[in-house]
Image (tube, rainbow, N blue to C red; front, side):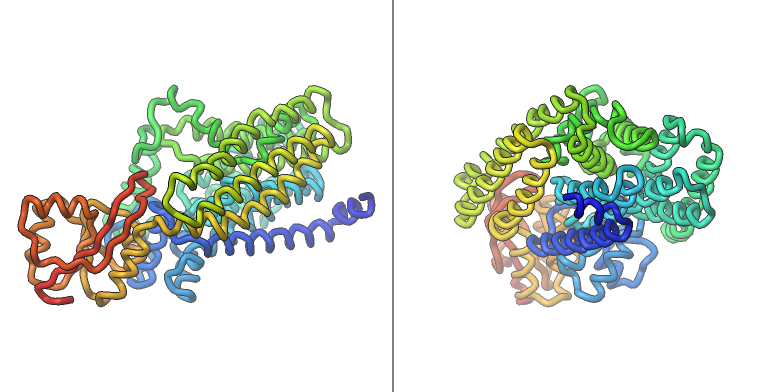
Length: 557
């Protein structure tokens, strides 16, 4: 153990191990990315917008289904367009840079941990971050969050690298580039590191001594970042007659802050504890150590005074700001995850050194209050849930996954009480890795059988030409746009459906069977021929339905 520790504490040894872990993380997340089709609704929106960007050659302004998409800035589309051009519009291509971003997030977390807590803690933090539930989801999804996260961590990592060693111009430029990329990834939320750094400077006595230099650097870096963002935003806004910023900033940023959009959020007091269960579920399985870790951080048991100030500033400032934002989604607090990973990693090693008080060790064991209920419900759901779904493959893969999860939880808790946090942490790492086997090769492929869009789109693509227009009614999931490989025409109402059917030209209508039957009961629709049907689950709405693709027979597509 002493020999291993000396290698880890060696700067070269720590870096080599960190790079290897990052490569393993990237490979694992790329594997996860290939196991499922895109999930509605965010993934196919980003993916289809990227495909339209590649097809049109317009790399300035993203569109979805031919209409302006101001929801997010342009960086995610630029990055996704590279593998899409090389590999085509596949799941791997669309999710590729999310896996890369997750690996970079882990590596940058190591950089922070190595500076503040030592190389071994940095390596533990990498593993903890990569194996938490929220990161497992975000890191394998074709969305902007896994691209945003490393940009924000990079800004914090540059600040941390300067503590005790001075501020340099090249670091300021790098911080500005990181903030600029964060703004291009998701807009003003990319400036959250600025809040974290300012709060840390104010809270830390050691850092406050050089507050002027740090704040001047941060101000210059912020200006650089904003200029990078404006270098794209101004031309994009001009090209859209002012719509991009009015919708992108006015609606999707300021609007989300003051009122709930898309039914995500509500009354402030009602949703005040919203992110507490998000953390309990999303940081699983490391919630086993989280209560003890938080207490250890607040009492200054891990790292020095700057480390304590940084972790407290990081976790509290982001939590408070996102709680004040009225629109709420789980991934809005993802930026807290590296800080929690560092806190848990430092606490695990502090316990090994007998540096924790008796009360902190008690709270480490009380992590079971958060951990056990989630593990129990998850394991029970995996074991029992498949028997209520008519998918045969779930009958073995679900219970197998539940048994692995239950076994991991039982062994980890026993080890926690018998030998401490380090012993249970090793069980959690191995358990999460083993759990992926039945999940990736059993549960997820079985769930794929319930998806509607890929099957319907595949039949439409096979039985029509690329020029055949596709209309939809009663089913507007963006995954259909992506997998059918063309723009679709959403029909407004029943009258529009009838008018569409009576047109004398090729066309395909995708519609729920029960909705079609209701319309046929009121109108004579004879010029339709069924070319595909699929029973499944519209999981974005939580409803079962049978979807059909009908072609107009007048022209014989």
